[in-house]
Image (tube, rainbow, N blue to C red; front, side):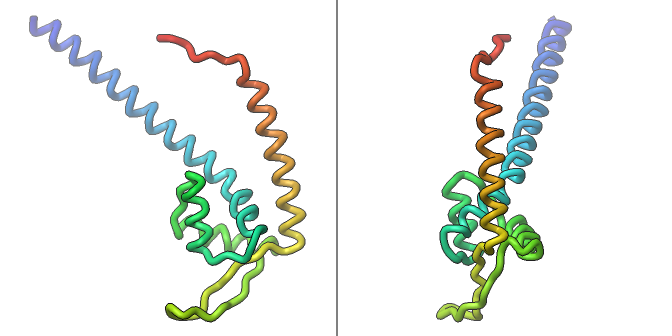
Length: 137
């Protein structure tokens, strides 16, 4: 009886580890996918109107692209250094002046290219997964 219980426990333990590992791999893959499209999303959001970083984060969270300030600020800085975004300071009633970001002409052209690439990738993924059915275990 002890051997059977030990065997079942060992199977359960392996299954639990596999589930946890697969879950961790899935979450990591999801995070990498989000990071990959974050630049596109930020440029798209800022292309509509000047935005304060916390407003950008709010928009991203509404779209289920969870982002924290520690992720967004380096990205905004990279986009600014690449001359895809610019910013200006605006006075605030609630404290010091705030940086508001807007897209540049170069940024708009870059965004158009990114959107075209996104459409092509999205189409390719749709086509390649169209007839795939999950395997039963």
